[in-house]
Image (cartoon, rainbow, N blue to C red; front, side, top):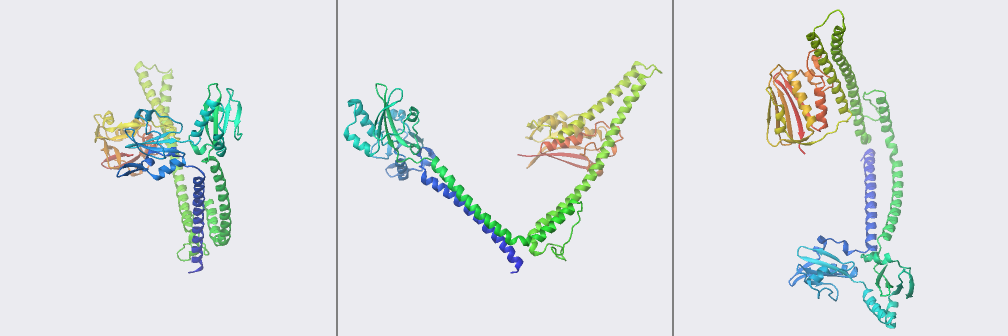
Length: 546
């Protein structure tokens, strides 16, 4: 393998290794983050959905039973899980005692306990009942306190072993008596907001109000306490540390790699920069550098093949810029023609208005009422034409600046097109031809094209409007049987104010109708195609199905 091939292979290998390092580092840090959270955070049984619970109910020869994994999770959540059928009969349960076995169906339905959770499965119910380890001790201690006003010594030894504290709070929530370890003062909201998620509780709390208004409270540390926020924060810190170290390592690798291969890229980069500078000076000719290109083919040498797409892109850019420069010159020519035509169409009616107004203002002749009405009618027609021209110009620039908003609705072309039918225009439509369009703007498109066909064909020439439902689109076509449109005019048909060879003819309209129609079709994300020959012209508007 030649040195240039080895360099190419090494270059690819470096970046493949670099890419693999990024993937391994990213995946590794994410996996470590989630495994760390999984180990530090408890799995709350309340978050499971019925779909997950359904797989935990196992069918056996004797009926149904709970899976071992669900029983273990119930124990982990310090509670019992019960499997019941639709008649509220207990089929299986975890733990040694069955709290709901002796209950009636109505009692089970009305049963309520803090932290209780139910899941409705297709043929069963699952019921989770939390079991506080403090509750049985609290019941005995509370009973002894209410009966004797003291805590038996036999209870104190067990309570001390489990770090249980007994506290009394008066009506103003002042702690008067404390037995056991003195802990942080509780507030009433702490008892009321005791979370059913045992992994978020720092301690078990049981409380009851005595007859004299004081509150009897028992507290015990929760050995299952695994808060989510603390390991999450620590996991994020560890993730950031690992992420930072890993990217410092990647930075060192990048610098080393860059220094190792930078010399191989200097010459083609200099060539590319010089080519860009020539393009900036409007020099679009292709250049040849013997140190970079092959003498015969003119392509980049093998060791610089990496830059071949860039060289091709610059050549394409130069060709495109040269084409755009030609288009700009053509646009400038069209603009001059546009201004000339506009000046002519404004000057002609203005001249008529000026001439007739001068005649009316003259004192040399007394015009009859009929003559003055005829003059006024001509002046009114010319003024209406100028007003329509200005309105069309304003509308084209609103469309150009995207200041027109569509009000789309479902339009059934079979019914909607009937309004355009007259002695000269016939309408045909297949069934279920429905599009999403702005009715008013679409009406203007069809009216502009039909009006253009009437104005540029002999009187009485048939015009057909057809709507067809095709496989991928809906096509609305307007066909006339006129003499056709010359190719030179066809290429500029949708240019603003282009009238081809007819700028001196006395033709109705402002010359902007087809330009407006094209802009409105573009606004609908549709396409318009024109085919014309000596037998007539077809305008096809194509709406894509969505």
